[in-house]
Image (tube, rainbow, N blue to C red; front, side):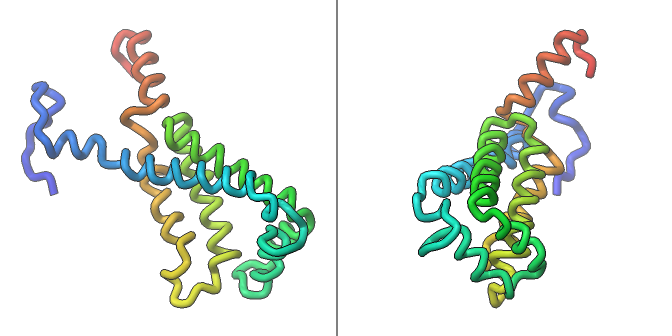
Length: 172
């Protein structure tokens, strides 16, 4: 807990704690951004994944988890067009990863990541026992700080905010 009462931003002095606080979400942004870009590209380049049926296909995976998912109706929707669902997830992961990594529409990207993680938790990893063996819940929780805070440092959003402030004469 930060106990001193002075603000380092008013007098220009910053100590290492202030700097660390400003950049605290950056490692999380990089990890989630790179991970979701990788996941999206992995799905798009895996010839077995983007099929209705067969070993490693999105269709077979969805059929395998249907009865153990929290919301079988979600799986049923995906099974209406498994390949389309596979592309939607892969392209969603790619968009979320790029937005998060560069900090463009960062809160919206993080919300997208949280929704993808939530849908995967409720379907694919719901039956993980104990629950902490399924990583989708952990990803969902990791997205929440970025939904709340966005990408305040080293981001396109921050650059656009600074540019807007400069145009308005230093005011928001």
